[in-house]
Length: 239
Image (cartoon, rainbow, N blue to C red; front, top):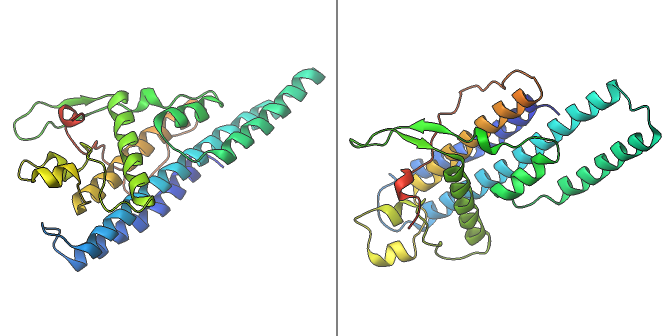
């Protein structure tokens, strides 16, 4: 496994999200109004996007593990104890990797730090403020919060909740024309599904580039390089 393969696997998984968005657009215009079928498609899109992110983190961890093992075997330790310690590290790492199931920012950093890599500093970019606002600096703390909120959405969907927690990442919560009831118990819109997909592509792009640089490999290539998008203005990130 290398970082390019991790990116390729993620890109392949995300094509299913793209296809679901196309299905939604073919079934409706994405406008307002309660559409049960399209809402289910939006739910599925978000669940698949988070699953693809989780799989990427695991693949990235494997890529970094494999690079570490190649390096250690190229210069094998001359100490029997050090050799045994390296073997135990590999066993312990694989056990943690196998149990990885919640790709939150803390869990992701904890896993990747086991191979000496912290992805969080790379989660930084400048994006347009929108509608006359100045450009804004997206920082790791903003990215971490958005990851947490999308995981909260995935949890609600996976547990079959008819409505979703009221979270700033959701369009209905930020929409000034939404009723109080819609803000308190939002459903998932097409825009939400698209924002989720764009966001995780952004984080994977930056994580993969930094991870490749960490081991001295070239940045992974994409068929279409993802644009960097948080999905909302940072001033709207907290209720």
